[in-house]
Length: 325
Length: 293
Image (cartoon, rainbow over all chains, first blue to last red; front, side, top):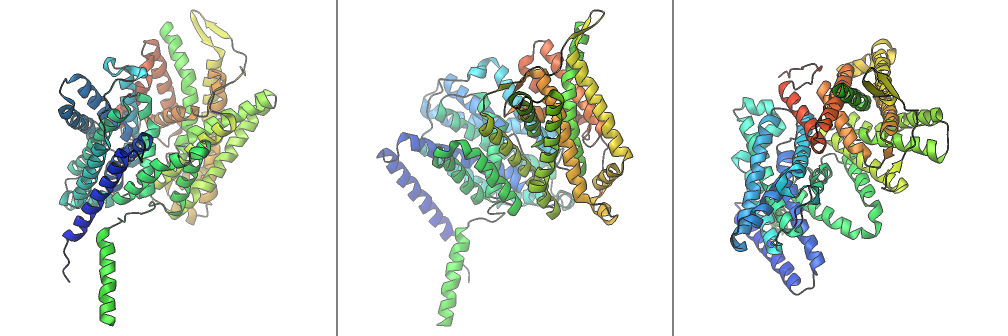
C-alpha cells in the first residue's frame, strides 16, 4: 500500500497552527497572564537551544559544553544591533536576530576549525574553555556593559516571534537531519573512520553541523536578549551550557522530539516545583543520575515521536480488522 | 625580585591545582572519565575540615585526617553508586560524563542545603610568617603548599610504581579486560583509584582553606575546572604532568594578575589550554596514542 506522505505533515501543520492560535488567544484574552506567557517564551527559547545542541551532540556525537557561549555572543550582538542600528524596530529586530545568528555562527567557525580536530573529551574541554573565554571577554569589553550587564534593550520578543522561530528551527534541523547531509553527519557519529573511508568529507560535515548549531543558539540568544531586556554575562556560564545539555540528554541524544519534550518539561518543572525550590536542583541531579544509570541513551533514545508511525499503526490495525472481517 | 615573588606565589596556588589535578589524572588514566564531580570533592573536603575544626572544635591534625578519610570514602562510595554500573556495562563515555555532572550538581546543592549558600570563613590553620631570602619575601604558607604537593607526588609515584596495588592500577589502565584475565580485581582497583584521588583532593582542600580562608558550596566548580585544565595541560594520565600543569597554571595566573589583568585570568588559563591542545593534543608530558583502524 502506497501511503500519502503529505498527510502527517499537514496534520502537524494544522496542530501547530491550532496550538499557536489557542495560546495567542489565551494570551491576548489575558487568561494566560504576562508572567506565564514569559515562561512560554522561555520554553520556546529553550526548545531552540536544546534542538540545536542536539544537532551537535546527539547527531554529530560531539560533546559540546559551551553552547551558552554561542548564545551569549548572539544575544549581545543582536541587542547591540537593535540598540545602535537606528532602524525602525519592525526591520531591525528580525535583522538583529539574523546578525546574532551569523555572529554566533562565525564564532562557531573560529572555534570549530581547531576544536573539531580533537575528539571526545578533549573537544568537550575545548568548547568549555571557549565558552568561559567568551564570558570573560564579554566582561572585559568596553561596549558590553561589563559585569553590570547591558541594559536598555528594547523588549521586542513577542510570543508570535519565538513560537514561529522555534517552529522554523525544529523544521530546519529536522529537514537537515533527513537530508543527505544529515545522513553524512549521523554516519560520522556512528563511526568516523568508516564514514571517511566511505567518502564522506568528515571535517566539512562536522563543521557544518557545529556551525548550524551555533547559528541557532545565536538566534535563541537574540530572542532571549529582547525578552529579558538586560544581559548579564554571568547568566551564560558553564552551568547554563550544562542545563541545555541536560535537556538534550534527558530527551534522548539524537531525538529531536525528545529534546522538545525535555525542554518543555524542564522549563516548566521549576515553576511547578516553586514550593520545593530549595530541593529543586537536588531532585534534578538525582533524576539525571538515575536516567543515566537506567537508560543511558535518554528517555526517548534515538526514537522520534512520529505522527507517521502512529498513523501507520492506526491504519495497520484498521487493515487487519478489515482482513479479519 | 618582584617577579620572582609572584612566581613563588603562583607556585603556591599551583600546588593546590596540582594536588587536585593528580586526582583527575589518575581517574582519567584508569577509566577515561572526566570526573566533573572531583572539584566538588574539594568542596566536601573543605566543609568537613570546617565542621571538624570550627563546629566540633577538633585539633587541627584530627580535622585534617577526618577530612582526608571522609573524602576517600566518599570517592569510593560515589564510584560504587554512580559510576560502577555504567563502567561494567561499558556505557558510552558521554553517559559517564553526564553522570559525573549530575553528581557534581548533587554535591553542590546538598552542601548548599546543609550549610546555606553564604560563604563560611575558615580560621588560619598553620602559622603564617614571611621568609626573607635577601630581598625576596615568601610566605611560609606558599612553602607549605609547594612542599606538601611535592611530597604527595612522590608518594603517589611510589604507590603507582612500586606497590602491588599500583601495578594493578597500571594494568587496569592499560587494558582492563586483560587485567581481569590476569586475576586482577579491576572493580576494586578502580574504586581504590577513586578513593586515593579523592583523598588527595581533601589535602588540596586543606591547603586551599589555609590559603584563601573562605569556602562556599560552589568553590569546587572553577577550582575543579582549572585543576582539570592543569591535568590536560601536563598530559592526562601522567603524574609528573599533572604537577607540571598545576604549576604552570598557577604561575600564569599570578603573573597575569600582577600585570593588571586580574579580570582576564580565566581567559588566559583556558587560552593556554587551547594552545597546548592544538599544538600537542596529548599534553606536555602525555603519550601520543595513535588510533588503529
